Each structure stands twice: as structure tokens, then as C-alpha cells.
Length: 115
Length: 115
View (tube, rainbow over the protein chains, first blue to last red):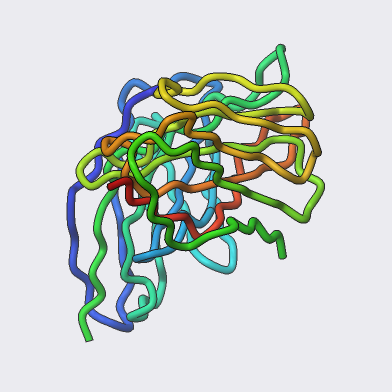
């Protein structure tokens, strides 16, 4: 699986959009980009994932560049409850062998929402 | 909502004890995982299972074993606990389909202290 690079920490004002970057310059054609977050003292929580096209759900938007070498997770109106560590993961999803083999979590970005 | 329940939030054990960490999921997921999380090291995959009685080693299986006798339950076993196994242990599950969508659902974690 391709490696990812994220800034170790970021600040964002409450009510503003939080834009979290992720670099995955070695991504290959069949690798998806996943985003999870981990709020203090809880297990990680799935946010969103995508392959080529931009994706949006009730939690966030995912913007993937045309060359797929980087992506941005956008939390449109950040609240204090969005303070968490955000993990960007690149993962091959389709395997002929079936089964599963988990996800590799890096160190992520610690996003701090300021009141 | 998917629920992944870990039997204990906090656990204190002595060196050399046999320790069982239990995890139950209620969504009929095929795949289950055990991770440990340590400051500065992030989440690391210990073992996973994609079917009843099936198990696969993750990145750091040494000192651990697992058991999956029923689909909903995945147990992590420390045969002889050591102080370097003091950690936060996280269980996760996911549904398998042909795309191997890695949308993991995590439990709240068990903080294990080995004295």
C-alpha cells in the first residue's frame, strides 16, 4: 500500500471549514483513499473514502486531485467536537483472493478546533 | 448502527498472567481485527480474522493469539502477559464484499496495564 504524508497538527476556528491535506504521491491506480478520525479516548471512526471522483457525505467532503497524488478532507463547518486525530490511508481494495487484511494507520493530523 | 463491544474499558493484570480480551459485534460482519495503540507508534495490527475459525497474523502477532469460535466474537489472548504489552487494545469489524470495502467499525478500546 502507498504511503501517506500528513501534517502532524493543524488549528481551525470553530464554524470555519477545516481543510486537511494528505499527500500520497506513490498511489497506484487501484488504491482507494480512506479517511478516519479518532476522538480522544475513543476508537477510530470511518469518515469517507474515494477512488478518483470527489465524494461527499453527511460528515465531510473528499477532494482528490486529478493525478491522485494528493487529497483534501473538508469539514465544512467545524465544531469543537471535530477536534480529533485524522488519518489518511491509501489501500488496495479489490483483491482476487477475497478476505480482508486490515488497514495501516499512520500518525495522522491532530486537528484542534479553536472556539 | 453497528456496535462493537469490548468487554472491559480498563484492565490491570500481573506479569505472567494469561489475559483474555473479548470483542463482540452485532452486525454479522465477516471480518474482525485486533489492533494495539501506543503513543508515538499509532495503531498496529495484531491479528485479524475473515471467517469463523480463520485467523491471520498482522504486523505484530508475537506474544498474542486469537480465537474466533463464533462469527460475532473475536478474542485476543495474551498467553503470559508482559509489561511491554501495556497498551490500548482496539477491536474492529467490517463487512466483506467483493470490493473488500475497508470500512472498519471500532470498539471503544481496552486500556490494559500489566504490572
